[in-house]
Image (cartoon, rainbow, N blue to C red):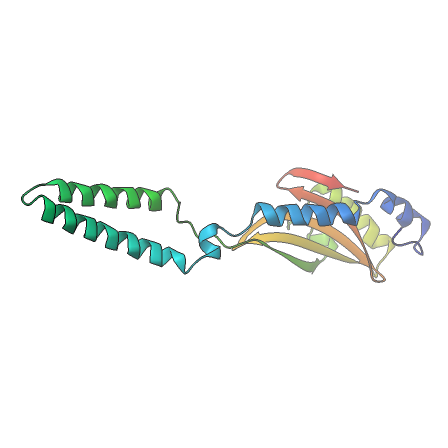
Length: 176
């Protein structure tokens, strides 16, 4: 058990800490959930596909116009194709979202509520920090672009770590 050499009260508080294996499984599941989009992974194909579709539209319009001179069919075909591509863009089919990444940083015990840490987890973290002044609190955040998706809080002392809680918004997923 981490922190075996600590004072007995702190050791009792950490007896029900979130297992680091559960935290790692949660971190991996969240990375898979917020993986990069297909278009982000294949960014070179997006402009090729869009330019290629415009080229195909022009070729089909030219072929239809050559086959049926004086017909309005090529005009309507072009308008239809442009509408389809426009709707695909509007509805986000070509959305290029980057993948999420985990970032960790040390935080002060007094700033936990400002950072969105739930009260129950913040109270435990402050109590542990008062019993172990040399301990560090580490806030881990899953970030996608500038948005924080999923945070957790660790306490670190003498090279060992314990997870105090994982939450999403107001919902606590796991807590010590």
